[in-house]
Image 1 (cartoon, rainbow, N blue to C red):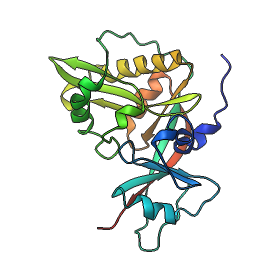
Image 2: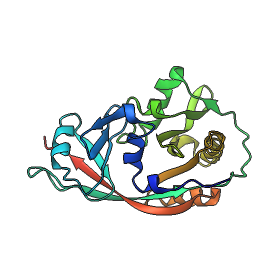
Image 3: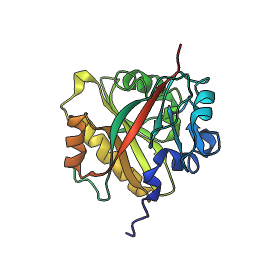
Image 4: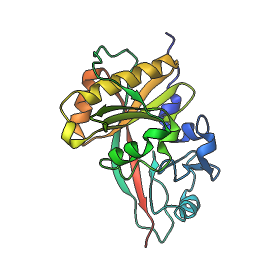
Length: 228
């Protein structure tokens, strides 16, 4: 297949907010954020002074992130805390057998999804994050034990996110099968899967590499906290 240009992945939050998630954006001109019900991320372009936008957005949510270059902060805010994330991408089908029953999650599974994801990603998964894309899960004894889903999206790319397995069900290959399934469904939409992972999260990084993801670049996630 003809590979699409990867420019949008150099500022994935921004391009997601001006493309597939335009309706979920809070627009401050050259600074944009996801509405806080969907995701705690923002981004900017053209070396914009972000201080005014940050001050406005901080009235809506206490903690959030700017993804990309270091933002300029309002004078009375604390300095942002930098976390380094790896952006990984995959262009080839994963040859992992799927032996589990994978469920396409709907509104009826919402409470199960929130309960599981909040165990691992309480900062990143918000009340409407699941509406940004499709989520998939594995149930055991009527309990959701593993999920994977889609988050940021652009014309050519879909981010795989919320790769979560319940602590009592790790080591059974559930995440591997869910990622394989999600990658395949993204390809069927004629888009390319990518993901972000904290550079200190070595276990998942090794899994992604084994499945065929390659490192594209590093990103700074600047955590901003509104003073009490």
